Image 1 (cartoon, rainbow, N blue to C red):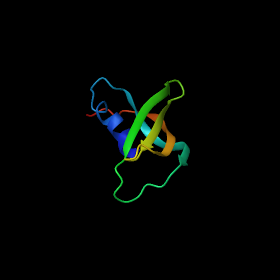
Image 2: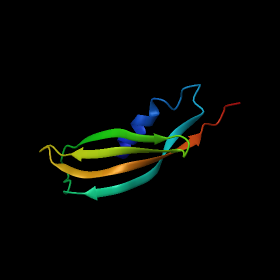
Image 3: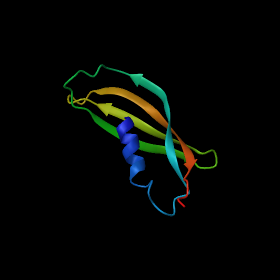
Amino acid sequence: MSTASTRSIEHVIHKENLSDFPVSSGYDKLRFLKPVALGDTITVIYEVIRIDKKKGRGIAENEVFNQRDELVPVGERVMRWAKKLKGE
């Protein structure tokens, strides 16, 4: 889930006209429904469901499935907006 979050940010972080960008603030409503074993193949579905730029907060829903298409962990990733530093 962390990698999916990072990849959602990395394609925009270097844009020149970007004044702020999301950074992880942790998880909310995280539930482990079934164990994930060594050797399992997992697929993460990551969807941004809310953005409130005034509050500087975004929420992304995460669902993780194993190779048997069983839902294993689920949760919401909380993102906060940080100001992009300007290079000199």
